[in-house]
Image (cartoon, rainbow, N blue to C red; front, side, top):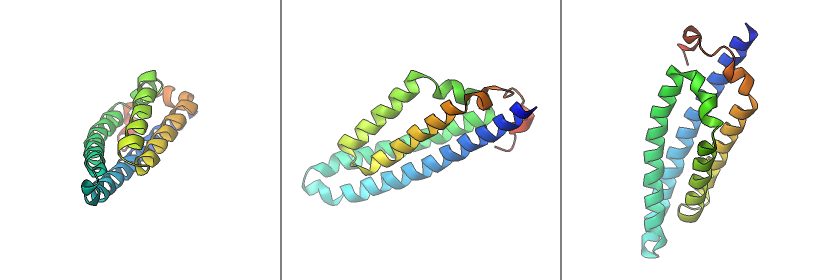
Length: 138
């Protein structure tokens, strides 16, 4: 029974952190666009605006992903434990570093911290997660 309670808490924590990540990404994307506007004259602004647009698109995609995880919390650990998830986060970090400025790195590091939380709480996120009744209020 304690595995279910621990899993419930860990899954809710991941969902909450992912929601916060979306807010951070939208703020960063907005800053990238706003900072990029005056930099258009120098040439770097176009890439910064494009990166901000991409980050907004990624945030919208992440919102859909969060809703899927709320419905199927047992998918949290399998997704985050894959090499593909880590590669995706590292690529996003690199793109933001190169084209979006250092502010995009902040949210990428936070995403790495979310992944680290999931991996270190693997047992709580894999024991008892087939019980949908416990996840109705995520």
